[in-house]
Every structure is written in C-alpha cells, then in structure tokens.
Image (cartoon, rainbow, N blue to C red; front, top):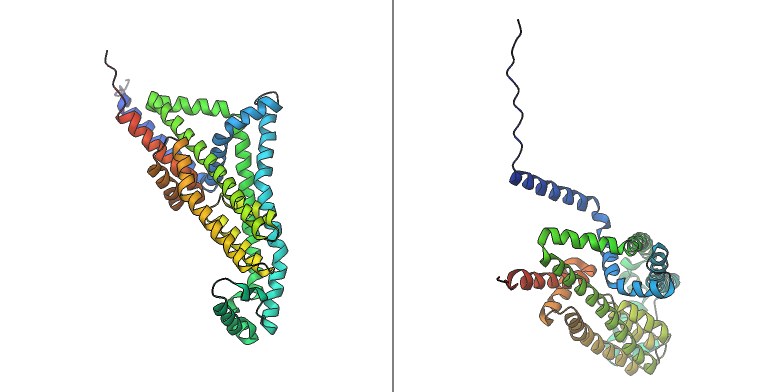
Length: 363
C-alpha cells in the first residue's frame, strides 16, 4: 500500500523590492568589510589616487612625447620620475639629520660634564638678548644646572629617539613604496578605471553622477596644482631673503623650504632654523630677524589668501568653501585632508547645484 506524502512546498521567491534591499545590504556589508580589511593601506591608496588624478594630463603628454603613448612601460617610467622627485627632498632631510645626530649626542654629553658656555651669537640677538644670556648662564653654563635641566634629554633618550625615528622612517618608506606601486597601477589602467567609475556613477545616480565625478576631479587637480605652485612661490620668495641675509647654505635651505612648504607649518620650521643658523654662524641678528619676519609675511599671505584663491578659482569653488575645505580637511583628516577637504566641498556644491536646482525640461 503506497503512502502518499504531502508535496513539499518550495519557499516563495522574494519580490523585486525585497531582492533589491537584500542586494543593497549585502553590498554595504561587503564594502564595509573591504574597507576594514584595507584600513592600514587606505592612506597610501588615497594619496595614489590623488596623484593619479592630478598628474593624469601630464602623464598623457609625457607618454605621447617621449614614449609610444600610454602603456605599461610609460606608466613605469613616469612613476619612477615622480618617485625621484618625491624621494630626493626626503633623502636630503634624512641625510642632514643623520649627520647632526652624533654632534647632538656629543653636545649633550659635554653639557652634562662641563656645562655650555654662552655662545657669541646670543649677544647679537635683536630681541631679548640680555634675558637669553641670563637664562643660559643659569641653566646651561653651570654643569649641575645643565644636568638637572637636561635630565629628560640625556644621550640615552636621544638614542632611543633616533631609534624610534628610524623605525617610523622604515614604515613610512614602505607606505610610500606602496603608494607609488598603486600610482603605477592607476596610470597603467587609468582609462579602464575611469570608465568603470563613470559607468558606476551613471547607473547609480544617472547623468548627474558623471557631473559629480567631474567636479571632484577638477577640485583634486586644482588643490594639488595650487599646493605645488604656492609652495614653489613661497620657497623662492623666502629663498631670496636667504641670499640677501647671507644665510649659510642658502641653497639647501631654499630647497628645504620649498619642499616643506607643501606640509602645514613645514616652511615655518625651515626659515626659523635658517634664522637660528645665521645667528649661530656669526651673522647679523638684524638679518636673522629679517629672514624670520619676511618668511612669516610670505607664509601668512600664501597660505591664507593666495592658496585658497587659487583653489577656489580653478575648482570653481567660492572662496569661503575652499578655505573651509582646506583647513577643515586638515583638522579632520590630517595631511591628506588638504586635498580631500576641497573635494568634499566641491562634491557638496555640485550635488546642490545639479541635483536640487537642476532645470526641469518640459516637453
């Protein structure tokens, strides 16, 4: 006698709306997992993307003029050139620091054993020379006072500092290498990557998505170009003061100032060090003060007026939005925020103009 079983009911398929929601949730979870996995490499990837966007027109000109057009070999050669441009100032800075490290350790040892006499340049300081002389005699000329003052600056701590610096330097160099590797990959496959990004934006947001991407690209290129132009201008303007004031190794300080001008407050350290070196090497206190004063004027004008104006003009951003994007991005995201901030503001402005106030064409 056959036993008839009730036919098993298959689960009902999800409707189109439920399937779309499931896909969106799965995609968001997958993107979150990918970002979490790659979190350690996100900063160099962002830097590589910024460089690729900013340098793409220059790369096309380079590949067309010196190579057989855009190709893997052209991308490799161009990446090597960019690496040399980036690594040369870093190498000079590391070499200079390495040269001075032994001298600093020896100076600390001698200060602990016999104190440090007041140098001649203290008397030539244009401001507070007498107060500086009294402080030096009370804290550094007497061996006991010098030892007490430099308890936290002994040679062992300085050695540990340079060891930590070396470890961090190796880590940063690895991230720089990875960023250059990513830059090569983006340049080699730039057209394909750009096409996929535009296609994705078109499918997600329609025609307005492509306009949004264009605004972000324009803002990225404007920020990078503005940063480089302002840094070179500031370095050359301050460099003139180095030669006029007779700063020792003026050309080296000019290179450092130009390179460090791309880093927030970097140029301030460069021309302040130039002023101190000028006095310590027997130069005029008035000349040293003039270098510092001129450097301050150039940096204040360049960073707070010229730079935001260049970025706002090239990226078609209002001056206020460019200013907030640059310095707000620096506060929120660190150094990379100098470029990410204006891009965010440009995207916000493009979305506001194109998506909300986009004219409606009636038949």
